[in-house]
Length: 408
Ligand code: CTP
Image 1 (cartoon, rainbow, N blue to C red):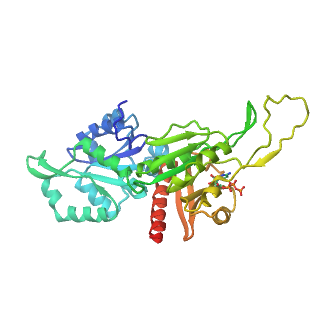
Image 2: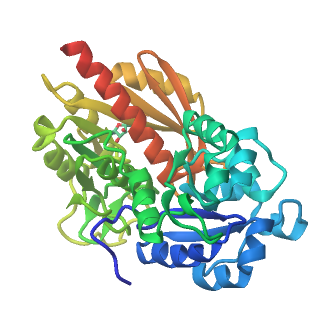
Image 3: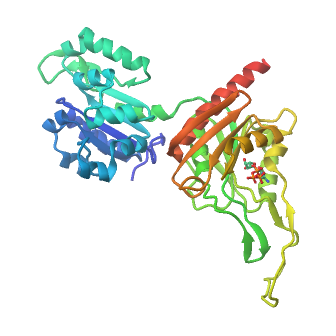
């Protein structure tokens, strides 16, 4: 597959809403281009949209079933409106008719697309397509203004010849422009020019040449944070324990195995970093004297003596003039209390606490975080790790900037 230089759409979940406008035929081209840019696409087709292009076209082009019914038990069972709303990294409505713009403004939830837009935390964009008089009408302009104030991104329209024979504003942007604008939704620039150092994954502590102690960390959260930070414009260095994950685009990765190796890799770079995010599940202990030869099962019991590993995060936080430090706390109980204790004990700027167990945490696709700093707690509700990482990154950027302003 051809991947363009701008890789912001790689692995992104784009929910494309297609509504009733003659420009719906251009949405077919848009699906193809979004997929060429590396995105996964699901189409929500409104009743009006289905008058112009059949679901089969979008199913074939997106490689996914097309969603159109809100209250159909079968469709809801396959992927309900809340699941779709969560799945989306961005919702793009192209073409957006005057009708859907009015309905979004009212906050309606009486068809699938409107309900998804209400339920999603992802950015929503509309690419208007309508007759120039409908576009110029004060009702449409007022609606757009309200949507803009609520954070909806208008993509276009442009001017030109229209299907109705008139000429003027109201033409939908070309597919290539919509793809570019969609990619820009992820390139926030919130960390532009900053150096971000991140640890991720588990560590492996050698017992002998073939065995080790480790934990269940998949590294997914740290990798997602690395990707989000790179998209926010940071220069990202990811110090990673052993994982099965691909390096995110534009991220410099340094592979390590043990806590001591991770410690050396991080401390060698920490003074150059503006922000340090410790998401690795570093083994607290390592075997005191790993055997040089494979240990043979000659005895009924075997004891391993363990010694403490260096606390990488605490050491970075203690560096004079060191980076803004963000820790993670994975807890099964007393989440906020333990996390606050870690924030204070390690002298961190921020800590992201998550509950492990019950389908959340280390090996799960989704997560939820309570982010704590000196001013209080921000709850980031359950979402796929990539989305959560973007919200966490935005929060880190905001707090980092606030702290930097205090020092000016
Ligand atoms: N951490 C680290 N180096 C270590 C241990 C932990 O950098 N040797 C970092 C982790 O990356 C994470 C945070 O510290 O950001 C977790 O704190 P920690 O106190 O190690 O967590 P737990 O082991 O769960 O703590 P406790 O044993 O006190 O429950």
